[in-house]
Image (cartoon, rainbow, N blue to C red):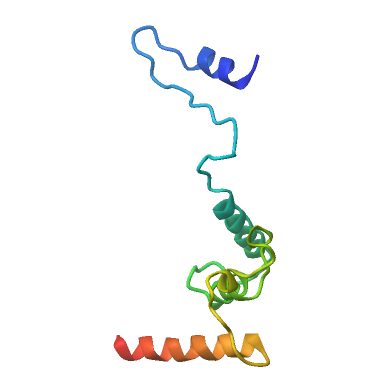
Length: 114
């Protein structure tokens, strides 16, 4: 017995069907959230080994977001980072220093607005 048959057998009703199982067989041409689930899995894996990460506003998560978007090559983007795929150029000898300086400038501007 497959999952669909077991589902119909378990969740039945005498009067009106309560639920219906919608099959999802293929990925090609379908909308799916595989990329988002991959990111969530990476964050969960990182979160397990980092102490002091109980708060979501921790600088650790902001740093991981910067790493994910500006430094980590993605296979789905043909080895590019999301920033490179979006044509965001990072100038300078040391990319990490440039990104941190730009984030610092942006953070200071936001503090003045509040």
